[in-house]
Length: 434
Ligand SMILES: Cc1ncc(COP(=O)(O)O)c(C=O)c1O
Image (cartoon, rainbow, N blue to C red):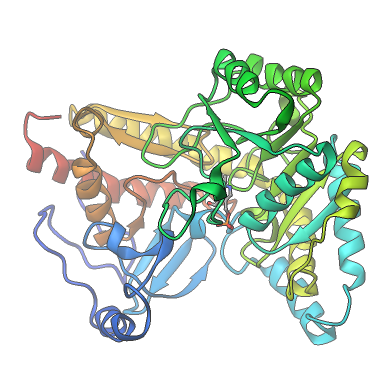
C-alpha cells in the first residue's frame, strides 16, 4: 500500500481514523448564518447535509481540476459541479469568450448572434438535429421536450424509466412534497434496458402515447450505473416509430462527455429530441434541446421563453466549450484519466480485500461497496468518501462522479493516494464485513 500523504500543501496529513470531523470555521459560520435565512440551511442536491462529515458546504473558487473551500482547503474535484465543469474550472478559452461577450452585452431585448451560431453548431454536430432551442436548466430542457412531443402528437402519456431523474419540476421531481397526483398522472414507468416492459407501458398508454423519455444509460443515484443495451436503444426507436410517439433522449447529465454528436450517436440511434444542459457551457447557465424536422412545427407552436434564456454570455461560453472539447480532444482526455482512476481503485480495493463495484463510463464513474449494497445503506461509501474528502479528494457516496478534461495523470495519482487511505479506513472500520 502507498503511505498516506496529503495531496496538496494546503491539505493537512490526517490519520486514517473515522472520528467526527468538524467543519472548517468559516464554513461553520456560514452554515450558522444560512440556517437563519435559507430554508434548511441549504436545499437540493448540493446540500452537505446529504454528505458524510468532512465535506464543506461552501466553496470559494476553482481552477482546472481543483477547488478550494471557504477555509482554504484544496480538493481534487471529481464531481465537477455535478457535471457542468467538463473542461476544468475557469478554462482560459471559455473565460476569454465570456469576457469578450460580457463587455458587449449579456441580457438584452433579443438574443445576440451567438444564439444562431450555437444552434448552427449543434445542428452540425448532432446527426439527428435540424434545429435547436435554448433555456437555462436541465429541467427546462426536459420539460420543453415533453411539451413539444405533446404538442406534436396531441397526446399526453410519457413513458419514463422507473427511478430515472429528469428534473425538479412537479411533473418529474422524485420528491412528492408540494405536487399533486395530477402533475404526474400521465407518466407511465418502464424498466431500463427491458424492452418488454416498454411495450407493456406503451400498451397501457394506448393511443395516448406522446413520447418515451430516456437517459442514454442508467445513471440513477444510489444505484450501480448500467450501460444501455444497444438492442434496447434500437428497440425504443422502432417502438416510437410504430406508435407515432417521440423518442426523447435526456442527455442532460451525460451530454458532451461521451460523444459530441450526442450520447447515442455511436449506436446510430437518432432521437427525435435530445435535451442538454450541464456540460454544454462549462459551468455557465445554459440548456438546449435539439430536434429533427418532424417536430419543428410543434417546437414553433409552444410558448418557450424565460427572462434569462437568451442571454448571450452563456451561449458564448457554450461555443467556446464545444470548440475546446474538439480542439483539445477533451473526451479522450477524460477517458484516459478515468481509466487510470478506475484501474487504480480496483487495485487498491483488491489489495485491501474490499469488494466493490465500479460502474458507468469511466468519464462518469461510480463506486459502490458490496457490503453497502447488501445492506441497502451507504455506510462504507460514507466513510470512504468522507476520509477521501479530508485528504483533499472530492468524491460522492451515492451519486455518480464526473471527470473533466483537466484531470491529468498526476491528478489521478494524487487522488489515488487519498483513496488508498480511505480504503484503509473502511477496512479498519468494517473489519471482516466487506
Ligand atoms: C438526466 C438529468 N435530467 C435532467 C436533470 C435536471 O437538470 P437541472 O438540475 O439542470 O434542472 C438532471 C440533473 O441532474 C439530470 O441528471
